[in-house]
Structures are given as C-alpha cells and as structure tokens.
Amino acid sequence: MTAWLSIALVCASLWCALASAEILPVVVVYPEVRQPFAQVYQTIADGAEQGYGSPVRRLELANGLNSVDLIGSYENEIVIALGGRPVKQLLGTQLDHPLIVGAISVSIDGVLGLTMVPDPEAIVQRLQVLVPSVKNIYVVDRPKGNVMNVAAAKAALEELGLNLVIKQAADIRDAAIVYRELVEHLDADDSVWILPGDRFVNNALLSMLLEASWKSDFVVFSSNPTHVKRGALFSVYPDNFKMGVRLGEIALGRAQGNEQPAAMEPLTNVFVTVNERTSNHLGITLTDDKMDYIDLVLPAR
Image 1 (cartoon, helix red, strand yellow):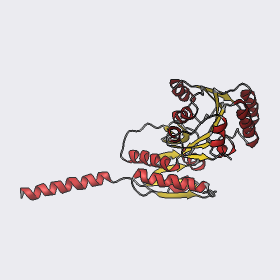
Image 2 (tube, rainbow, N blue to C red; image 1 turned 135 degrees about the vertical axis):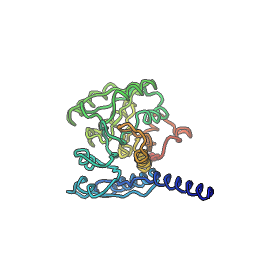
Image 3 (tube, one colour; image 1 turned 60 degrees about the vertical axis):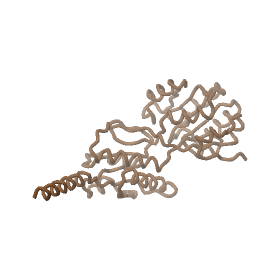
Image 4 (cartoon, rainbow, N blue to C red; image 1 turned 90 degrees about the vertical axis):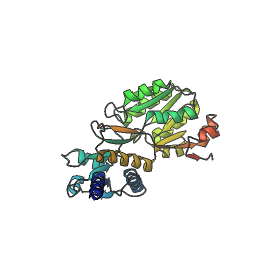
C-alpha cells in the first residue's frame, strides 16, 4: 500500500510539474509588406519560434486592419509586435496581453522588447578592428526622439577611448547644412555614422558624404547595407534571425514569470558588410583577424 501511495505521489508531482511547465501561446504580429521586406519579418518570426522553443502563431496585418481588433480574438497569448504600425496600434490601447516589441528603430520607455539599433559597443568593436586610428564618431540626429540612448552611448564609447559627437538637425534641409559644414573639418581620425532608418541622408547627400570621405580619408559607415554598395566603408545591420531568437527568449522569460525590466535592449547580433574598394583606398588590409568580424565583402571593381 505504501509503495502504491509513493507511486501516486510521484505521478501527482510529475503532473503538477508538467502543468506548471505549460507555456503560454505566442502570436507574432507584423505588417503585410512586399518582398523582400516581408522576408525580414518572416525570418524574425522563425527566430522567435526557435528562441521560444515552441511554435508561434503568425498574424500578417493587411493595410486597413487594426492589430487591436485581431488580437482581441485571442486568449492568453503573449504578443510580439514587429514594425511601426502594429507597435503603434497596440501601445495606444489597453491591451490584455503581455506585449513585447521589436523591429523598430526607436527605443520606447517602459516597454519590453528589442530595438533594431545596434549596441554602440557592437559597432565600435567592428570600427576599431577595421580602423583602429579613428578617435571620433559623428552622428547627425533629431533634437528629440533619438534612435539611440545618447548618454549611454557616449559613456560606453568614452570607456573605449572614443568620442561620440551628436549634431542635431530639424529636417533633411537642416541636416544637409550640418553635414556640409561637418565634412570640411574631418580627417583620418574621424568617422561619420549614418543611423538606422535615417531619413536625413538621401542619395544626393550620401554622394556628397562619400566624395568628401574619399578626399579627406575619413570613414563613413552606416546601418544601411545598401550604402556599402555606394562606397561607405562598412555597414552594421541586424541579424534578423538572431534578433527573433532573442525576442523569443524574452517571451519565454515572460511566460515563465521571470522578473524582467520593462525596457528595450539594443541589438547585439549583427552582420557586417565591407566595401573592399573603399578599404583599399583607406589603406586597410582585410587580414584574417579582421575577416573574423566581417560577414560579407563587396569586391573592388
């Protein structure tokens, strides 16, 4: 009788453990967009599924539809919202679901998630490997709504012996004036970082920046990989799958009741693309130790 009671207690304990281990379902919401942009969201969702360790539902939001209305039909789901439109809709209402946000280029106070803005240290690590002579990093940004935590970035870079200089501009016309005045004083000790989602740099302004950098040997690097094709030295941009993995891990922690500060993490998993022609012009040899930090080299033409 005692043996049967012991077995029963073990089975009851196991059942309780399995019941407590049951995780909440997750739904990933993202806007319906054309390819190749749609693949970005799909890849992030794939990563979230791996990070969460369980299949996730996917909700592609067509134009004209509201995330809040569609999410209302779900129960208990943890919501991972990707992209500006779903995030804006879901943050603007009283949501009965745990919310995690991602794939946006701004950091929102009091919200759990992950920005697409690379951690400044992740960028500087690549910059110092490629061009260790650089001492100053210049950024042109809006007076409000900065895409990165300037105070934290300045402190982190100062510890690495680098100076982050923020120049402010109200709009693209103002930015053009700031950039033109800036490049007149830059040399090989300096670099210009074009921020993620930067609307201040159009084709004409990019051409001006690259032409000036070629003459004065300062570095232009960007969070937009297409700028590398035009002549920027390198680009640091998101590893979408690993970004999704991290979002899935955050969701898993939320499901398990772990204490997590309501804050957005900077991106640490990145890809690096380098323009070989520009590196040759700057006298940078892509040695094996440098290649350890590079994912793609665009060959010199």
